[in-house]
Length: 392
Ligand SMILES: Nc1nc2c(ncn2[C@@H]2O[C@H](COP(=O)(O)OP(=O)(O)O)[C@@H](O)[C@H]2O)c(=O)[nH]1
Ligand SMILES: [Mg+2]
Image (cartoon, rainbow, N blue to C red; front, top):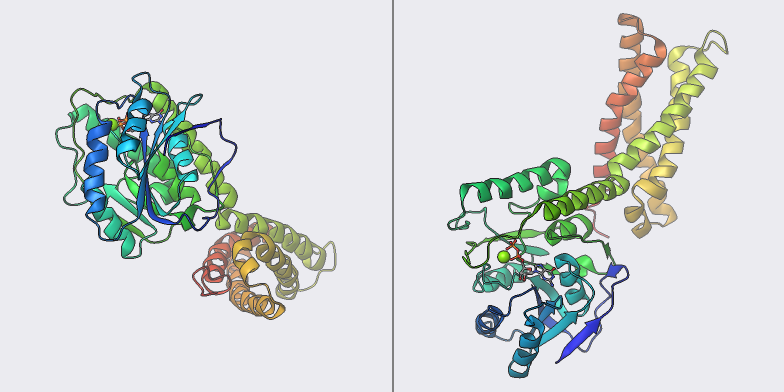
């Protein structure tokens, strides 16, 4: 199909699929100086993929203007294999944007990526395909499940690799912990999991980006053994590590900004402010001096209404947008109230014990109560009021 030259990308978003070009699978091979391997890998992949009955697929090579002219070789190969396309990017050098640009140009319902240096065994592609056919949103070839491995890696290399994985687990546990091999560059993902989502990849860890920003629910893992290619030592350098750190911190910020729990706590903080102010106005001996329990009930109800509105519009916006009729909102408000009234009872018990038994300052006792009750409120409401697993 020839080479396509691309300018620097804007936001990297996957557009909805346009029939009639629909294929089952689009496999992207990012390349940089792979002219020694490219023919062998393409031949082995074609043999493996042609062995899957009825599979309509394409292979897209995305080369960053390799000095060894890999793109030229890819172009020659595309004469022989019509299902092969080659993209030559002339002003960029980055593995993960190369992969994404390949997917942007892809026509498949399922996207795949693998290294082109023969370190990823081509046979595993059929296993990944089977996992996707069984309904996975994402299938990862993993070195860390039974049957997988890293052949003859030296101890320092193993330590660096595990260290990087550990760092990922510490910084973004909710992403890196989803799979046994978050560093894998060999996986398949459903187009629908990425469609319309803005991805901001950086460096080598495209899988982390997909796990963090894509809509991936069902994940499968398939073992593979990383093959050594002795003429090609690992390129991991301090610069690559620095890029990885930058990517991790970017993902952390993104996850915090969109985390429902963080939003729930921010809303909760606004409710706490309202609650505390009301408690002061109603119960303090210097103001109205009403009973503590009576004042607290009124304060909590006002705070509850405030919290419901913000949680519905913001914290759980994705859910509420899909279920936004008046009846559905009213039902959520009722459930929220019901669950939070259990929260209020809990709150009252802790407040009274703190104030009367331990002689704590009333506001400190109230804050301790709110802290405990936040976890109750978040977990029960997430599961029952804004149930993200609910059928639409
Ligand atoms: N397009 C593109 N491909 C790259 C770039 N860097 C590496 N690759 C390709 O990405 C794959 C993995 O890279 P490699 O250096 O083998 O990574 P490692 O196996 O993790 O050490 C190989 O197919 C490389 O040719 C890049 O900057 N641009
Ligand atoms: Mg490699």
